[in-house]
Length: 236
Image 1 (cartoon, rainbow, N blue to C red):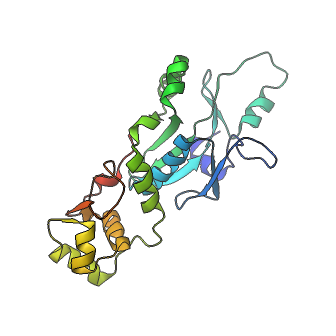
Image 2 (cartoon, helix red, strand yellow):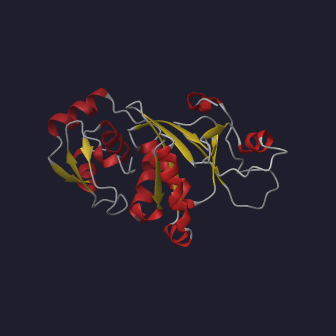
Image 3 (cartoon, one colour):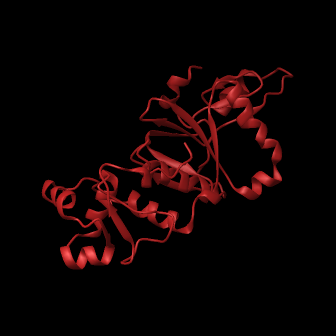
């Protein structure tokens, strides 16, 4: 299977199935096709962060199943099982949580794992090494990189329906927004709405540290010139 074709496939591993008792979070994403199923809070916040992160162009959930012994890639886990049916060969099966296609043209596989699980399963450390030997980059993201504020703020930004400012407000922020100003002051003194501030974050006109505290009147924003590093919270 050619990896450049994996975006045309259904998820390699089925998470959601009608009648299944396992808890599944079903989400839509602007950067993914259809509904994305995630099995844990860690996977869910990865999806949200990727949608906000400007470096990520496209999100492919459960993109492909590898046999890490051979490097062979299969469109689904079922396809791997079928291909090896009747043999005594035991594959080393691995399906990454996501493939992120980046605006740079690169692609990176991403796996969300709880730090406690990683400590209890040290053998998983062999997986990124095997992927690298096969020419693929795999980033394992533990829940510890996200603060509680990250969870709130990223979901708030992700839900913003319009990420573009109107021309007049954009020009005003560029020319007249103070170098540093709190959310509450911006609203009371200049009539700037929360949606406009959020849009300015996406456009790189304003910046704030998303990890410190959930958005509130005391949240301080600084004026910047096209910088969006505050949205790049993933270790890509």
